[in-house]
Image (cartoon, rainbow, N blue to C red):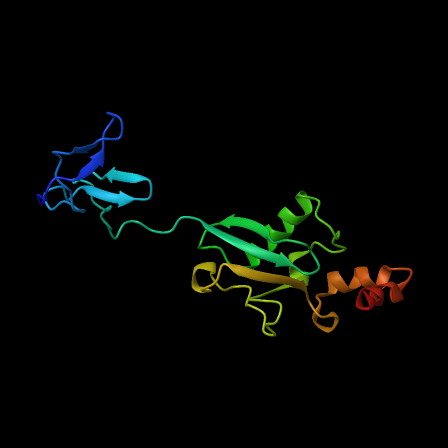
Amino acid sequence: MISRPAIRRWGDAGGVPAISDKPLQIFPPDRHSELVRRRGGLLTVPGRLKPPEKSGSQKLTKLLLNVMIERSLGPVHVVTSPENTVRDLVKAALEIYVKEKRRPLLTETDPRCFELHYSQFSLESLKPDDKLINLGSRNFFLCPMPTNSIPSSCSEEAIKSPFPWIKFMDFLL
């Protein structure tokens, strides 16, 4: 604290100036290092507070991933293990999408009929056997496979439709 000359301020006695005996205090005080200035006042921080020690035994146990499914309004949030594969993520995202009864309804829920991409603008799909921890992203885009590369169980359902031209109506929207 640095002492300054007394400050004149207005006292209670009819507007007569009074002299304060309190010295000015310059912030931050050197001897009170645990004081931190915050908007609205001072905050005390305990001096013994230390950041947690990092040990080699701590490892990531769960991942929160966002999977945007083509034509849906919002992403599906999937909590999964980092050791799972892209195939597991696709399966989990589709299960959550169907369980939450999201729109538009999916005509096919077989995970083998879908591809996972980094974004809707990415042309290359992710390999089904890649580990999630190695992908480097937590946001993905899920879309149906192109019709020429759909496995046989998926293409059979497309053939069973009595009006195959309805499939092309989606492109008009």
